Amino acid sequence: MIRHTVFFTARDPADRDTVFAGLDILRANPHALKLHVGRNLQTDDIPGPKVDFVVYGEFADAAQMAAFKAHPLYAESIRIVRPLRDLRVSADVLINDDGV
Image (tube, rainbow, N blue to C red; front, top):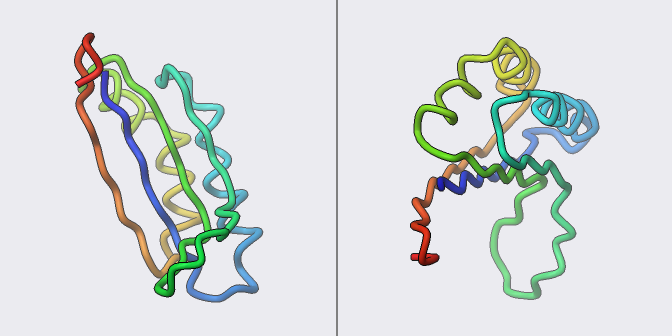
């Protein structure tokens, strides 16, 4: 299983709702086992940059994740979000059946 986590920050705080709506489109993409889009609660007291949104998805394998990224809804999300985002950090973690 691949766990895909992406962090986003809107360039302008006034665009946060538009960025969230653009990311939320991804939830309708049928090629994920799970997909969550959420606003960062920013409850961490450690100083430093804070992200606005987190996208978390689970995929059976690389082929399923590729199908997710090839879906038209993924392209639509990028079209909306990319011009408005400042930061995008992505991490993909391979989890084996034993949890490692």
